[in-house]
Image (cartoon, rainbow, N blue to C red; front, top):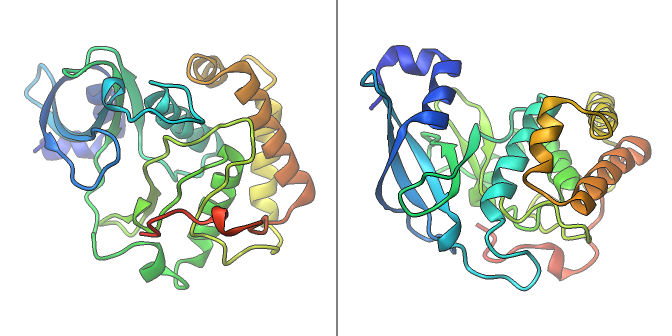
Amino acid sequence: MARAAEFQDGAAQQRLLREGRIKARGLMPDCSNYTYLAQVRGDAGTETLAVYKPAPGETPLDDFPDGTLGKREVAAYLVSAALNWQVVPFTVYRDDGPMGPGSLQQFIVADLREHYFSLMPARALDFRRLAAFDVIVNNADRKSGHCLLDGDGHIWGVDNGLTFHTLPKLRTVIWEFAGEEVAESLRQDARQLAGELTGAAGWVRGLKQLISAAELRALGQRARRLADEGRYPEPTSRWAYPWPLI
């Protein structure tokens, strides 16, 4: 495991994930794509754990281009960071992975007994933010088990590969807030995001390397729509729920 100082320094841990040597330790269970628990080591002897998803291990899909899910994982992190919502763990794209290029995400030490269904309604405020995030990124696969509770009590949303499609694809277990007003603070953040997407901020330049121009435009439109309309969407059919739910 990483030295304590490494975990105390978020910037150092991020640098380690960007530059460290990746060693796959084993496949993680119950994943539709090849997903590895990885050990990442730095030159100074520091190390940390990460989740590595190589593009060659992605299962082909009819509605998402092949080999793009890892880039969408990184794009989801960039949007989460730009919103300052901290709902997606730090994620980078590594071209030098041992099984090919792919996403590398900070490993969350989580209480696996907890997930969306067990954490609601006590953590409704956190899930309202995550629900708004999923609307903005058009998440097509928000299962209950994709909501992790870490040791500090923070809730993270992981497995964000099925995102940013130009067509409406929202599939989620988080429908408790359907029709409710979105908090004004979240609407303001969404409005600011939509404005930044038309500019030349560094994170936007990075986003353009991960999703298509059409997907970028659709992202801005969804953020603007959430800010202007200010309500959580309603499920339109049974298709709006992922399977399995957990």
